[in-house]
Image (cartoon, rainbow, N blue to C red; front, side, top):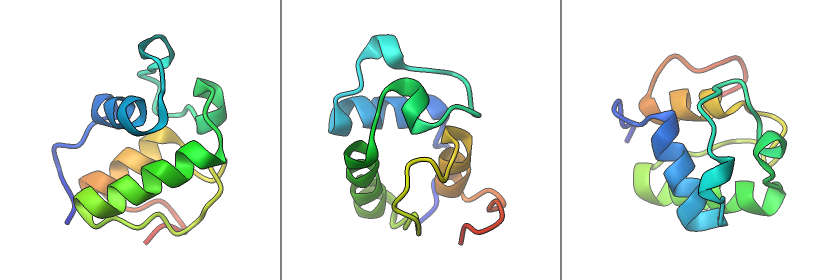
Length: 86
């Protein structure tokens, strides 16, 4: 179920909790990607699993380079999906 209150800060907190993202690497840039904050495909997989568990959201592509952080937030928030995201 989408969560319209989900924000980029929520995503940063989830990534800290589930993927070990340090506070110092948190960003407010919605155009950033996983590599920009020092995370890899294993962190992306961990995030995918947690988003599915918490929100019922499936990120269809396993590549962390596929999405910006803003696109991930928009998907969870239930906003209009960017092209290729369902």
